[in-house]
Amino acid sequence: MKKQIIIVGAGPIGCYCAELLAGKGRKVTVLEEHAKVGEPVQCTGIVTKEFFKIVKPQKAFMVNRLRKVRSHAPDGTSVELKVDDAVIDRTKFDQYMMQRAKRKGTKFLLGKKVIGVKDGDDGKKLRVKDARQKNVKVLDADMIIGADGPGSLVGRHIKDRQDRKQQEKNRYWVGVQARARGRFDKDIYDVYFSEEIPGFFGWVVPESASTARIGIAAEKNAKKVFDQFIKRLTSEKGKRKGKSSIMIKEMQGGLIPRYDPRQPVEMDKTYVVGDAATQVKATTGGGLVPGLRAAEALARAINQGKKYKKELKQVDRELRKGLMIRKVLDRFKDEDYCRLIKYLGNKKIKKLLKEESRDRPSRIIYKSIIKEPRLLLLARTVFRAKRL
Image 1 (cartoon, rainbow, N blue to C red):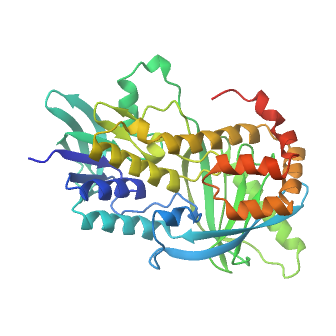
Image 2 (tube, rainbow, N blue to C red):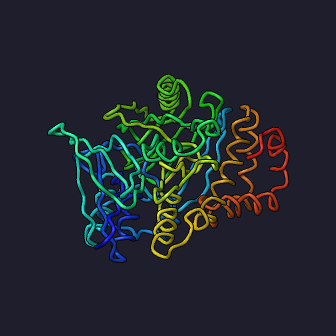
């Protein structure tokens, strides 16, 4: 009799993990608390070329291609860098990944919220609440994988099995995003750095020339920061020729976990992956590429009888580098951002950032300092940052 693997969460990371496991003949069931996979939307949906090394682009979920990013300093100056990024429809992408997993034999149960996890003598037990019928059932599993996002219940179960005094609370950003109508550069997305958006940045990512995803992320007072950001954008557009207002069509948002290398990811055949394991780039808040790579590592560990943490080594290395950069940026003042944008205008840096993937910060750091030594002046704050 095949052992039952239950994956909690039908986001793209959970679905990809299910596909890789079911593809090796394992019995996999995915539980999803929402009635429809991919909703509500809690992601900007911008991806780098590294993403397409894992998932081939499909018309079903592609929205727009981006050729440049325009980075704005607090003093109004900006620099344009060439990129090869894309905007995807997260609902359609999540559903695409679900269909891939289904074709490998994965079973999906939607509208099922896991409200409890226990370890028993004969395996693991999950208390599952049905969204419609409101009744609670107990499901048995030999193995549990938590792909249930920030504040993961499965992750809390792993922590509860360990010394709770040694565990610190995870840090999160609150992302606030709007789909808005206006007049935008279709192939350019904008990033805004300022002390007014502490610990993160603001963005304007076009879906088309008339619709964009506009947002910010912050650890505190996110809605207030978002409102101030919208006022700034509206003011800037009003100063330009061809004045165009911003009309909000839809509000989106959610928690973005900050990568924590101390986060436990496995214990006694219970695992966490993706946002549930804080496997998110601390530089940008992007979790698709590291999450998908982590899913590959977890599936490899299970299928080949290896240690998950060991298989995560490469993913963790890049996430640690990103966290180091974030700790430096967290200490930046407006004058530091202005200098950073100025240095990014270096032709050699522009070429480097076009060639290298932002999903591999370790390579970017090393090569950037060689090409623009003045970046070391900005890196002085790293000596004031706490060690990982």
